[in-house]
Image (tube, rainbow, N blue to C red; front, side, top):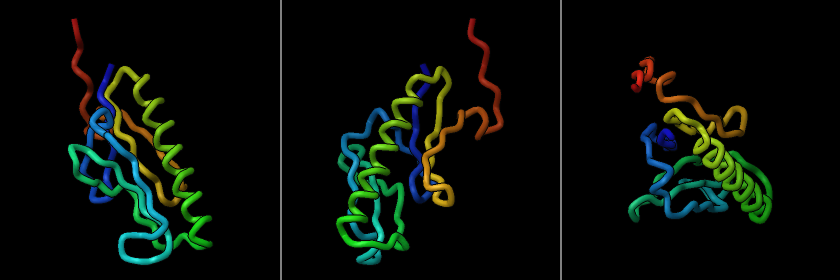
Length: 114
């Protein structure tokens, strides 16, 4: 079973199995509109999404952020079922989470075992 990594907003990677909390807010980091989503690993927050463009009431933005949290949890569960190591990334233009095998992202073929 491979490892699951999550890409942060700053293009860093955090291990999904070390995430202790997923947190969202009704405002982006720099605005009072939109929303942001972060994960907590070893007591430190890592921002995954910061969207200041999301319109609507505070309650509507919070509900949308919760929907994105649920989608992240589902993506993490699906990635854990994969034998290869996987990176989960948020695609803002498509408003969805996607995953790709680490070997595809690095251009390296996995080493044969046996």
